[in-house]
Length: 244
Length: 241
Image (cartoon, rainbow over all chains, first blue to last red; front, side, top):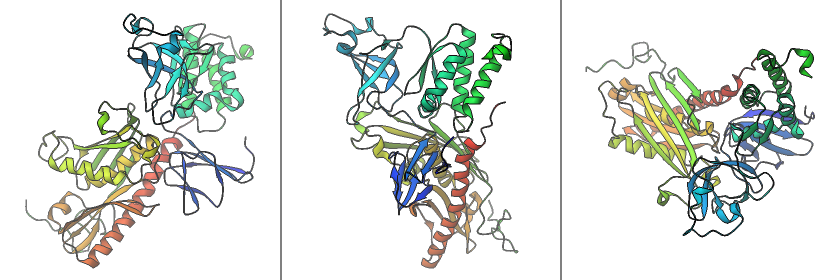
């Protein structure tokens, strides 16, 4: 799976996993104490001896917004000229009405809850976030805006990378095996659109399995097997022959 | 209650432990579903549950700091945790312990990562048998780690006491009640930090030095168990077949 030069280990806060001079790829999760590289979260530490790089992939944690991130937000507040969205970050996000409606609004004449009410689901992109203010999201872009169909499957934001997989392999597998539309967003809310309820259940179970077993190698094969088995069990396909 | 014999003829303590022996310690991480992180820590009969929520925005904006997250900590004893029913309202003692536990955690939490937010730590003592504040520190730091809050190190707590003239590690309720001194210590062993140190009673300078050494030795044992508990959450995940 990886080159021989990369070592992987499960680390906990305060645990030193490398010594010497390396480039730190994940500065939020690695600190340097007395020439040693120490993890600050529970995660998988990777040491690449060839490239002299270290990184820690966290296994726990909340979503930290980055500009350009695709997120699914729930409306939690309606203001005069903006909405407040819960995007599972430590800060709630702002969506301006000008941005969403594409025209200026007059708060004296219009009530924004006409367009988006508390509880609505919005697919948006993080526009700016610089920690001195809360994130601002935009719905300008293809496919962005209010979500009117489909189901949201929530997983831990740190496990998102595994649902996408190397070069999108896991994502392709999920879509290919179930025939559902799967949109993986950075804040761990996965938007799924399925032809029927049975397939949706199988897909949701598969996604939750990925979340649970994210740190155990050989995930893609296990998930593929799991989906086929579940489909056979539910009578969605006749047997192994139709699986591929 | 009559004063029991705390050190037996054979040099062992009233419960059969050696003076430098910890009580049986059990640590479980990730016991609650709704909290961001949680941990259950048992030192013998002492049982403490900690839950962490956040980092999150809070309505009390005046409390927030512009450059880092604040930690809010509540240490609370359940009304059935003691011999006689404890009023569930926060007592003076509990408010003070909430503060010292918070201060024991603050040096290790990298709070600059989440400015203008609050990290809430709730600690419930389920059963009290001495050393609840030290078990609380251990539980709280594990719950923080379980929540994915970046930390420089884990903090673990352990108490040292002096009973019948002998320094003993991890005092229980009886030794605390009838002993001459009780010294709770919380430390971040990898960083070599002591983040909580209190002393009730009288120790000579020499006794204090050896008591601290004893506490740090006990802390590193609990530290190893804590690390193992954090890893266990993942190691114990079995692949479903």
